[in-house]
Length: 337
View 1 (cartoon, one colour):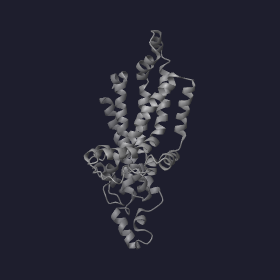
View 2 (tube, rainbow, N blue to C red):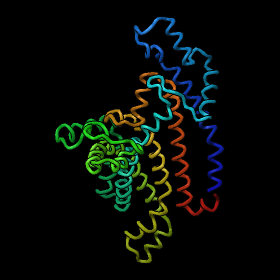
View 3 (cartoon, rainbow, N blue to C red):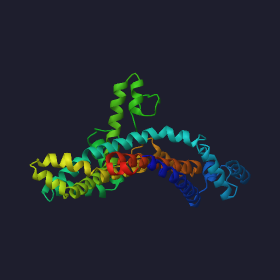
View 4 (tube, helix red, strand yellow):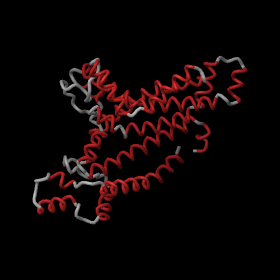
């Protein structure tokens, strides 16, 4: 494990440097001027415009702006939002718990259904059950998120009235942000159980939408990995000993098929924790995805730059955790780490 940590540490800073350079450069290639957006079409004279550009440091050479920004990031200062005038890091952590709750809920849904579906499909290979489950997984992977979200909203929210359309909790409840995680903070409120139920009610549809594609990927990877393991000699030996098929698959095959499954779960987890932009936008979920979209529309350079770096950092930390799980799952990796 120490070897893995050392390797990741040496790759950590070059990766962040490359991400920061791309973020800093690409946002300035996008059309639009943040100063003009702040002032409006009739918001100020050329003198006011130049004064604001100077105060934001946008009048300086691009290279100097980048070097200055990197120096600030190394001290933990990711800048201040042009729109809200709040520190980027503070805004990020205000919204990150909402994204974590949504992302983890979507992944739990995907894992709880995806792994059993893949296991059943592998056990019933080339049967109607296999074709049905994998056909459903392919359909789930192929559906655009925005379309799937709108279909579920129309059916469950508009027609049946079972679920809310947007938001994280009912507006009738005032939840004090202690940790930022609604399902934890709800227990510090007077109407704890009612707030918890309201939060769960609001979470159902976004989690279902966000977890659909990971579910399809996990199911197909579980099936493929199990089918490969089931061809091994030790599986034939276990069957020859008279063990029933359920025990052969669950006890002997599944554990050895876990590494590629853990790989895809780790990759999808990093994606849903940092890339739930469409889902959060459609359901007005107050997470970093929606915050990021609003910042792009406003050309809020510090938020976009800092947000991309923080998102990259999150993905790298998730990948590190996945690598450590590899070592725990696979004894061969443990010996060489």
